[in-house]
Image (cartoon, rainbow, N blue to C red; front, side, top):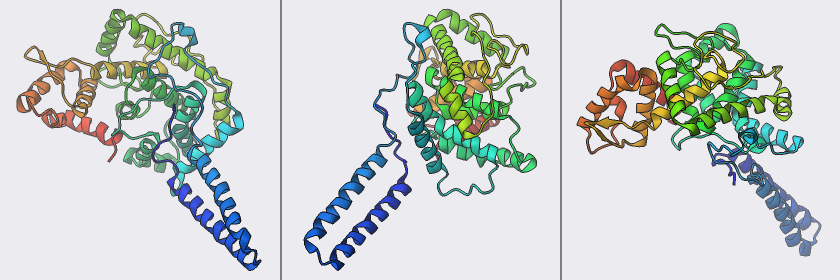
Amino acid sequence: MRTKPASQSLNGIRAFLEKLRSLVLLAWKIAWQGKRRKWVALGILGVIAVSAALLWRSLNWRTPDYDLLPLGYVPDDITQVTLVTDVPWKKTISVLDRIYLDAINGKDTDHKFPEILRRFRFFVTYDDLSQSRFRRTFYNMPHHRNAQELMDAFLQHEWTIQKIEAASSMPFSDAVMLRFIISLHTASHFFEVPLSTLFCLVFFESKFDEMAVNPIGGKGMGQLTPIALEQLHINRKGAPDLERLIHAASLHLNNIYRDEFVNKVVRHIGFDVSFPDLGKFPKSHISMARGDPLKYGTVFNLETNVLLSAMLLRYYMDFSWRVHGEEFEPSLPSRMAMAVAAYHRGPGAVGPYIRQFYRGNPKDMETAFETSLDSELSAYVRRIQDCSCKD
């Protein structure tokens, strides 16, 4: 059963309790002045009962009466991958609006531009929309930032501030941002990679530029290289379940884009965008050419790139790191650092650092792996960690 986040609306609850106290004092005053003392106790109890019921409802306002699907769940009939739940429009919008208001509570939003607030609003509310409509949520680790914390960190980043001050907007369109948020959430769910890590990888690799190209051949949102695509092709050929997973995720994305309820929420927030018909995800090699960036099949298609980037990160998260032919199990933070380093430079280049790390810490696997890296790679891993992890 879906549960509420621990940080939910504490300020609102405190304000509610203060109002409850005021109501109790008012009921006592009225009853005492009217010299109807026998009604004092009943009046106060009535106010407390009603207020307690409202408070209980407030504490449970985000708990639905359905179960979430397991992370990465693919039904036997892949065409039924998107389980649509009929949810009431007014109640859903009320919940999403309240999440947004909680997220900006206490923040100075007067200086924010409308387009930035719209994007912030969609980012911090999309998971609740996905949970209620499709019963799917994203994957994250306890020490990683949630969606609100992640967006706060992004808006406070020096690059973001400079772009906003220079152009009074972000250097990518509403459509690109919405497609990225939905693709990020879908990829995190199906491939079980931390949403915050994937977000930060894409940010530092391409700054959300789906047409980005780097000097060593990396292309698109996640800067996928020919070597990375070849590795993913080999993985897909050797694992039927992985092939089903990528096709399920790609089909689910298409279904989200076509869903009228989702499109209605998008319009309610204030966006004027149309989602593309992505077509079918190819079974063969992914093209490094431009192709049609609004269709599956090229690294310059945002959705293709994000899904494959998540698949690649998952591959490195599960990688069997060996020293002298023997597999060893690092701590979870070190394993994530190894995965990020391998994503950036490849497992072959990271291997020597892992052997060095193991020699220095054969029994203490809690030691931070990034301390054994060269300065450039260590700085990259730390940037991803600082972006994705809580302070």
